[in-house]
Amino acid sequence: MLAYLGLWATFGAVAALLLTLRGGVDASMAVWVAVPPAMLYGLVCLAAWYVCRAFPLEGTGTVARVLFAHVAAASLTSAVWAGFTPWWVAWWQPLRAAWSRDATLMLFGLGVLVFLLSSAVHYVVLTLEAGEAARRQALESAVLAREAELRALRAQVNPHFLFNSLHSIGALAGTRPASARDMAVGLGEFLRQSLRLGALAGVPLRQEVDLTRQYLAIEQVRFGDRLQVAVDIDASAGDALVPPLILQPLVENAIKHGVAGLLDGGQVRIAATRVGGTCTIIVRNRFDRESAPRAGTGTGLRNVRERLATHFGVVAAFDARAEGEEFIVTMSFPWAQAPASQGAAS
Image 1 (cartoon, rainbow, N blue to C red):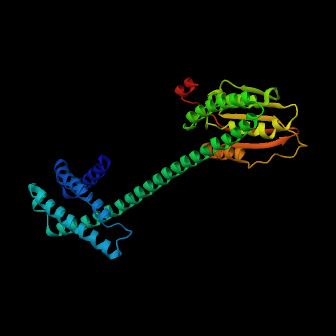
Image 2 (image 1 turned 90 degrees about the vertical axis):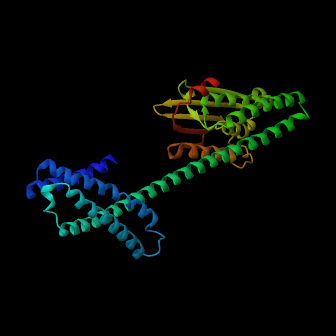
Image 3 (image 1 turned 120 degrees about the horizontal axis):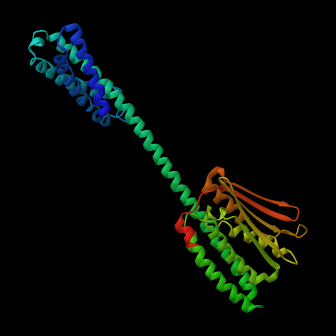
């Protein structure tokens, strides 16, 4: 508003300069004569905003209706201005005789043009505001859609894991009831922790690793010494913020399609490093290339890939491949430190 009124004050100052140079009017008198009416009309021209809102360019029927509304408003406001200015000038004796009817008519015409120009500027401003509102709404919709997709993907993890774990407990119940009981207790604790962390948008990687260790402890009840685990997490990588339950499907996949198919068992290795602003997590396991592939739906790997893409966008990378007798899953994503409260909770 200050900039707007300053513009009109400048317009009045130019008019005062013309009065001084061509009309021979004293400079201080010229300023008092020209600047106040100019600033007054500047305030009057703000009324164009209401006319533009009442008669938008879209959905108002015809162009003639819009033009008629603005010409009528411009004529009314300009008439008020052209009526006020001679009255104001009449207070100044040297200018009273110089003011004429032609000057009033010229002032009226100038007022109409300036008001119509103000209307055009207000239409531009309203269009920019509408575009900004549409952009903001689209961004909010995209965020809501992303959050809904993340919730849906997280909801897939627990049922998928729970089904496989209950199947394992059922297999142990007949032959090793004590082990089945230990596995059920461990499963209950794991589910309690996973439900708590799964409700969060992100957790520190060290918390995610601790939860994965709980899952591996459950599986070690079933596999015993056949399942070996090696974890190597850099201190700085442990602070990285990751989607909850991002490791568990990968480890479950490594056991189901790798360790379970080896007579002597195998090792699941989890490593995480941070290089600059990128965090990389690698999960490795041996598997038997000669054995028939176990049946699976690919839910685990697909879920992790989609959650990474949804959480981090195109900057995240996911790769799963077999190299010799090893199956390697590599994830990389931008490093962001978890809040101190979450880090302390681990």
